[in-house]
Amino acid sequence: MTTQPGIGDILCYDENRKYKFIQLDTFQAGTSPAAWETLGVVVLRKGNQVTVCSKNNTTKKFMAVFPYIVSGQMLDGAEHTATLKLHGSETFEFKYTASSDEAFVEALKSFLTEHNFTDWSAYIMDGKVILQYDNYTSSETSTTTTATGLTLTTRLSIDFQEAQPGFLRKCGNYGTGIWSVNGVVQQFQKDRTETALNPREDVTSVPSYPVCYPAFCGTSEHRDKDYCLYLRQKYCADPAHPTLDDWKRYIQDITHVIPCMVGGNAPKWRDGKAITDRLKNVVYQAQDGSMKKLYTGAVWCSEFLDGKGYMITVAEMDEAFGDVTYGMSGVARDEADPINRSLFAIGGDFIAVTSAFNFPHLITHYAIRTSYSGYYDNAYANSSLRVIPLARIELPVD
Image (tube, rainbow, N blue to C red; front, side, top):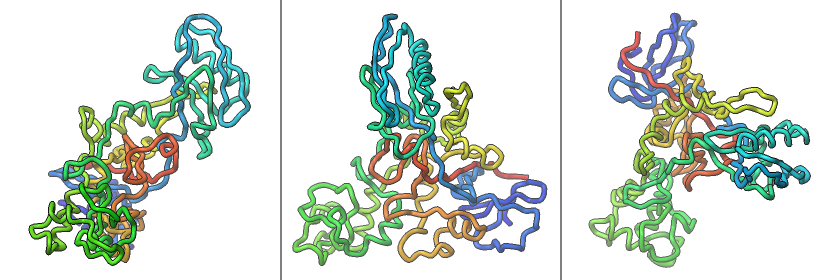
């Protein structure tokens, strides 16, 4: 055991439900007291605060619903007619008379009841009228539900509309960067045939994708000429004699800058705990009158460590899992990075990179990221993506 835990150390409950930490690579199943329970693994330490990822992660939906923002309604007290086609149903005429959004929502609710749309709800949130499919499946898209006389706009999350995520690379450029430097160094030293990784025309600026080492050197067996002199002139002391260190310096230069966010709202999107504490309590009124949680992914994460848990942000994901090596070609889980070695030892779920420059399918706060090309719409918000709860613990512990 240790009272000064570091990355890869294992968090347990003892027989009195007190926290205990077992050092990396010292855990042996069956040697701890029978009443002890393994909880997770340390992924960060800052001063006397440690961040622990849960032993278990799973696939969850960020939202198990598909909301549309309704606009264009006439609120002049006169009767108006629109049409609605919900989730591929037949087209129905929708007559309403309203002088406020509240009255308009009541008309929508009556329409849903009249036509037996029990899987739909209508409500107001943050000053916007929401028409929401509550039984989400992957077949619900912006083309299966349509309207005339009204405008239906899909939105990842009403709460996130003011977020301005930007992915700035260390070289100063926006665009596709690298999540896992270890992954790129491991896999892209080899010659690649893909055009994105091995250009077919002269490079005149830093590309969006990482150029493989042979292409960087101008020695790729898959190209008839050298297309990367620009990169060598930028990153090499001697462009005619590039080194592996020169290439690694280039790779470092196109990694994301933590916290991977820019703009005036950036700081508020860094703290996963604060955001989760807000989201877990957001509810909507379903058509049957019951109150339901909107952000089911946040609710599940919040339950880790007796309510200390939270959903990871992109900034925290990059910081906590930037050195993960499991998932790379030839890397065995029990010989991988400290986090995965300990998760393997305690029978936990793995955390892996899915390619050389992106993380696993993770739900994050201001975005649903399955890759590296920005943030997605409701179709991904409602998909079952990987959720990894985190929790912070202040040291010392009793």
